Amino acid sequence: MDTILSMQDLTLSFVQGGKESQVVHDVSFDIKAGQTVALVGESGSGKSVSSLSILKLLNSPPLKFKSGKIFWQGEDLISAPESRMRQVRGHEISVIFQEPLTSLNPLHKIHRQISETIERHQGLTKKQCMELALDWLNKVGIRNPEQKLNAYPHQLSGGERQRVMIAMALVNKPKLLIADEPTTALDVTIQAQILDLIRELQTEMNMSVLFITHDLHIVRKLSDYVVVMEKGEVVEQGETQALFTRPSHPYTKKLIEAEPHGTPPQIATDKTPILEVKELKCWFPIKKGVFQRTVDHIKAVNNISLNILPGESVGLVGESGSGKSTLGRSILRLEKSEGVINYNGQRIDLLDSKSLKPLRREIQVIFQDPFGSLSPRLTIEEIISEGLEIHKIGDAASREQSVIEAMREVELDPEWRYRYPNEFSGGQRQRIAIARALVLKPKLLILDEPTSSLDRTIQQQVIELLQRLQKEHHLSYLFISHDLRVVKALCHRIVVMQGGELVEAGDCDAIYANPTQPYTRKLLETAFY
Image 1 (cartoon, helix red, strand yellow):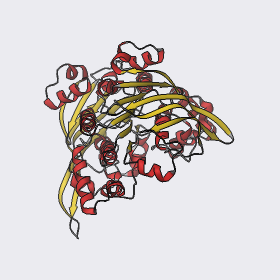
Image 2 (tube, rainbow, N blue to C red; image 1 turned 135 degrees about the vertical axis):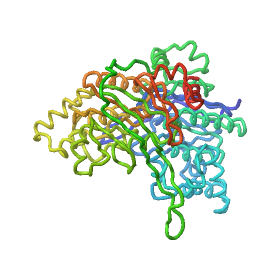
Image 3 (tube, rainbow, N blue to C red; image 1 turned 180 degrees about the horizontal axis):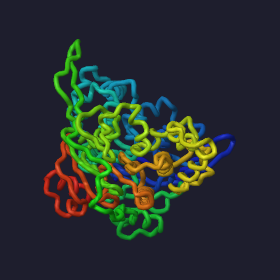
Image 4 (cartoon, rainbow, N blue to C red; image 1 turned 180 degrees about the vertical axis):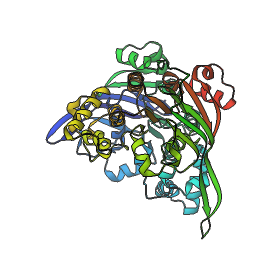
C-alpha cells in the first residue's frame, strides 16, 4: 500500500503570555491508502493537537510549529498556503469533531450546514444538495431524516448531532477521514452501525482513517495499526493484533487493562423509595401550517413508571432518541409532563416553581458535557458556590470553606478554585460538575452520560469516585448512559427504554445474564462483543 500521509518528527508548542510550553515532541507515523490508524492515549496526551495540525485547524499563534513535516500525498502541508488548505479541508481530508454541539452553528438549520460543504466542493444546485443531505442522514441512521433536516442543532439529541457531524464529514467522500472521538456520544448499537459504515466507505473508496479514541474496545475491532501517545510523545506503535497481544510499554498495558469495573454498595431493599415515578408522559406537539395547528405528537416519554430506593443506583439505558434524557429532565421538572412524580413522599409534579425551589438542592443533576455545562466566565469557586448563594446558605467565609471541602471530596486541589474551566482536562471538569452538585448535600443525583466523553482510565476514576461518594453520603443515582459496561459497574438495577417506552427492567446482574427482550439482548451483544 502507498503512504498517503506521513508525519515526520512533528514538534508543537503553545505560546501564551510570553511563555512557551511544548505539547508534542517528535511525533512520527504514516498512514497508508485504505488503512485505519488508531491514535490512542489519555486526555492531554497530544493526540488531538497532533491530528488537527494536519489541516492547520488550530490558531497559530498560540500554536507554534517548532519542527517536523507533514506530507500529504508528497505535498508538505505545513508550508502550504491557506488557499490550498481550503481545497484540502472537507474535500481531500475531512474531520469529525468530538463535541458536535460546539462544532455545529446554533443559528442554522441542519440542511444548510450539510449543504454548505457540498456546494463548496461539488458545486451542486440547492435541490441536489438537499437530496444528498437527506441521503446521508439516512445513511448515518437518523430517525425521521426529513424532519431533522429542518431542525436546529439544539433540537437534536447528542447522538443525533454527532451523526450529523459524521454525515457532513463523509458527504464529499474524502481520501482521509480524521475521526476525533466520533462515537463518544453514541449508544452502542448506533456506534456499531457508524463503525460498519466507515468500514464500508473505506472499501468502496479506498479511504484511509485516522481514528482518535480512548476506547480500546473500538480500536481492537476497527484499526489496522495503533499509535500510542503519552504526554505528547509516541511511546509505542505497531500492528493492532500484535500490540494488543504483546504490548511492550507500561503505559500501553495500563490502557488495555483500564476497563470499567467494580460493584455498587449493598443497600436495604425494604425501604420506602426516595423517588417514585408513575405513568409519566412527555409528549411534544408537531405543528404544521400557517396557523401552526397540532397534527401529531412526538411521544418522547410514554407511560413510564420506576422507583429508586435510598442509596440505590438505577441505570437508565437505551439508544439515542429513546427518551432517557427527556425522562431525566421531566423528573427534574425541566420539561412539562403528565403523571405522578413522588420525591420523599411528596408529589413534586403538583408544585409551582417557588414551592419546588427548596427541593432543588436535594435533587441535583450532572450533565453529559462538562465543558458546555460550566460557565467559561466564572472561576471554579464561583461555579461551585453558585448553588449556595441561590439557596442563601451560609456567609461568604462558610461558602468558601464548603467549596474547599467539596473540591477535596472529588479529589481536586482546592488551590485551583481561582482558575477557569478552560484550564482543566475533561475528567477534571467532570469532577468540578460533581463538586457543584455535591456542595448542596443532595440526596438524589441524576447523572446524564457523565462519563461518555472521558477516556477509559479517567472514566474508571470517576466510577470509583461516584461509588465512594454514594457509600459515604448514602446518595441515590439515576444513571443515564449508553455505556452498558459502566452501568454494570455502578448500578443495582437497570431500566431499558426504546422509542419512549419501557421495554425491560430489573436487577442488573439478572438482566445482564439473561435478558428477556430482543432489544435488550441486542444492546448487550453489541456492548460486549
